[in-house]
Image 1 (cartoon, one colour):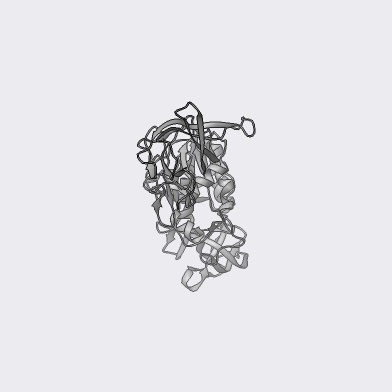
Image 2 (cartoon, helix red, strand yellow; image 1 turned 90 degrees about the vertical axis):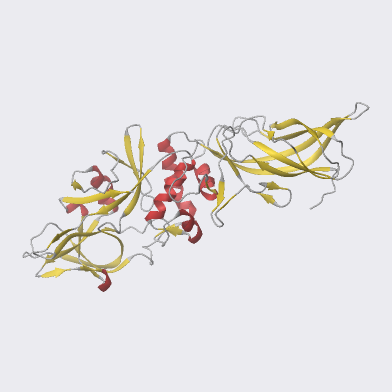
Length: 423
């Protein structure tokens, strides 16, 4: 588009990740392409966000469009509001310049040979910032008259994050982050400092995404496309949100170990069962739930030959089947000598545990009833265990193809539970 102004700011291309600037590459989750291949801002056509680690000083390549009556040499400057929270309202600062410019041509496009550096760093805290710059050319005529020419405005969405990211996270772009995750995390965590506070804010903010639990998607990009995911996607999403702010989380998958008794044909246990609907669901997802008649035992353990009261419930629940092929994915934060568990699917608060970070080697771990993991997380969050058990003169089998759901007992009633952890 050609403009009538003698000289106008036309495009701005921000630096692409040199060490000094600490740029964070942003990616479009729909196209899986990196933003910034073209200038992030083009007058009247494009305005894409840019992201930096807090306190960074960006630089930008500037293109100008000259039409007529343009001086060959001048100084370029850009003014805009201060982004410092303590600054007075309407305080304007010189963000760039004065930068000497010598045009190669006085009609048409000119891209400056060197990038223009910001005069001051971006805010030294996490946040989302709206920066509107007013661009000017200033020079002195041959007769000594000072001149100032307005070149137009540019508007920019800037993200500042808490610390540099760790690269190569599972399901993440090669470098940087998907734009929605950077925007969400920088807004929810604005002004926060501690790693624990950042993770807590992320967990509280998740419902705002509109993403739902129980949708068959297992990667972050797929979740953003279809509007939700399974636990394997949710723990990656939470891990990447934290990584946007420089916080490293450990992901683990919890597997239940079954024990078969060939003499009685019993299997204890075949599934961990959740009755909560999950994030942004009003009932368990129709896509992944078990819907049928559950036989809940009011007590456990019981002998095969004694009468057992079973409470039949027709409802929907989630089941995480035992063995290697299924499980429930969680995140862990180690901070100040404490271990915190984050379950993005079912919980709105972190759970502090009296235990070390679980190993990820798949070795069997036996949990007794006094285990803090059982008491503080497993009992309230996955409150039932499903098993093939003998009671009241028959074998109650778990056979999902026939919609037979065995017997379910309270997790807290079981003396010992065997699990294993993997990544």
